Length: 610
Ligand code: M6R
Image (cartoon, rainbow, N blue to C red; front, side):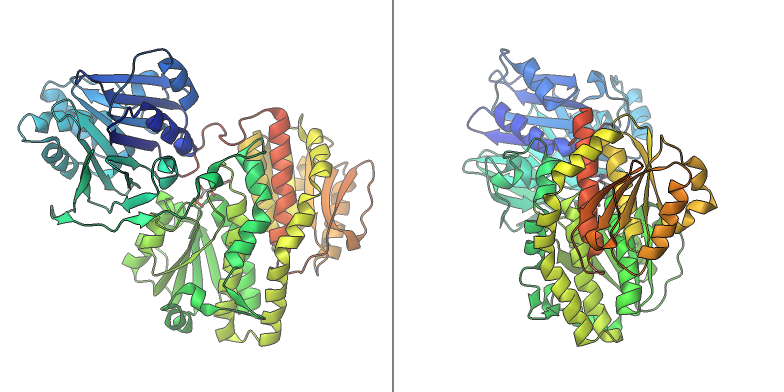
């Protein structure tokens, strides 16, 4: 779960590599490194524990120039964050390798290579690749041949970039199970873990497929598939603009992305609504047949995307009238579920590269589930390519590790799916029109909630010295509370848990005291009076409330209760709207605390390892 970038060009590539790494830091940021082949044909390498800016500082004022190079930003899997474990890894100062993924048979390979006389200097699984390539290059006519044989001996997942002083001007790349794109420039070629890393140098990309091994020179790219045949993969023009990944006037990407939500939702709805109806064509030409056969839904996802699935479960059962189960992908993939006929598997993923979600999707195919659909934010991602149907969220690139705009767009996409399926199970035109009207109103409502940011920032100050928090909701607001708790945990490091408010008296009420802030969500819906009673139970025991409540619910500020008045919102789409203040609360708490909001400790944006 790291970021890799590589370049071969007629110009110095160091700045290109560093810029690419900065764009990839969302994938990992505990150490970074770069290796180039210099004008004398010698490998020059620099590695540091820390961020790309630390690597950049180390290179300042040092002669470090080359037309061929590879670079890496790391999220530690094998071996703690340390200079010696940072990539690139080298063998005999000849071969250098960057790797994203996990080599499962690295221990066996290490023993074999040690027997052959290779010395290991790191605790990583990656170092075996460097030595293995070096070993094979001694017998093979080219680096490409050596890499091809080396990868055939690897078990696990990899996206790699390899250079060798024996093959000047050549960069060899290979992938299996981890993402890798080739960027096509004018007399210069690149590789990277995703397109955003290379947008400053090209808009034209080839997406390597599993088993591909590519050789890049300044003038072109040759790709061999898993069978060793030369293949022509299509060159695609990226629609992502370089502007989309600039911070603009915001302090953090997370804040920028929270503020982009009304546009992102409008974009996700564009072309998918017509009058009072949703357009089923949005799901692709095969959708009609698939939906006709669908009798139940199995959702699999991780983290924030899992929370979107939990909200959708309420919708599928209450609106579409069909059974829906939701499970975290890391559990689902190793369980032996009973497969009900006519089950549509719905995978939800911002990145489309989450290893557990991808593996769960693959497992459902093996188990014989009827059909699959991916809700995803990255069009060329592995999950999109694996699923039978797709519905893209159009949130734009999400850089902050804490997912925000992707979540609300996922909810919107899921609601479109609920309607499409619900039509086959008794959802009438009037109800569909009501939900469509609610969807269309969302961008304006979210703008209104964003205007509450100042008041929410004031509340955030009161959370600063707290070590724990409880989040409460009922119905669809329960998963929203879970999402709010996750946001607070991951960026402010304050422990937070969510409960359905009716469950408090079964245990968690024992935790309530003045040091335990309780964040509660109170839209004006059929559960409001029940929630009101639950809140009284907490107040009677000295709890301190932060309440996000519909203005019409008429809650009043009190010494033990701070009320943020929310606009009136339709009962179906309320989870989308009530997510936003919780994002702002977590964001401002973390920002005032001074944590690294966009790159919280120990995490990475895209979890491409198990
Ligand atoms: O890219 P995905 O949606 O598949 O990612 C799933 C989770 O890793 C992700 O939502 C994670 O929980 C976020 N950091 C939460 O903010």
